[in-house]
Length: 111
Image 1 (cartoon, rainbow, N blue to C red):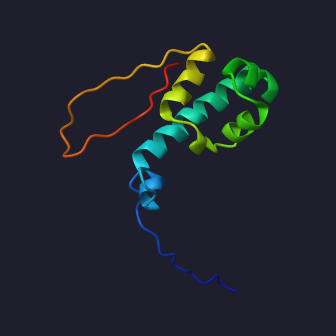
Image 2: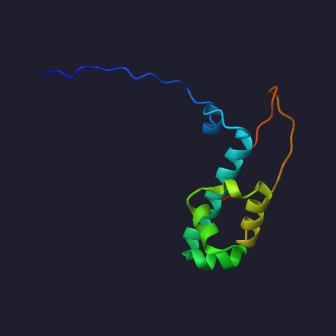
């Protein structure tokens, strides 16, 4: 029996899921999510327990647990950048003109 084709309604993403969902301060939330992802990757690569990560970051284990599950809403962008420096990484902020009417924020990870 031939399969019936179904169409699924969809729309193209803007590239920022938070903006697509009309979350307030979408650019900031995307930045925080990307910074939290880098923290997660570093902690996993070092094979740190959440308690050990908490000692390095200066926070308690339950806060590390939230961070590792990408619940970074409790932390400011500045605090997340502080965590990255505590983990031995440099954080570079570059400001440049854009050709678009509105600028964008991005996280670029160096190898």
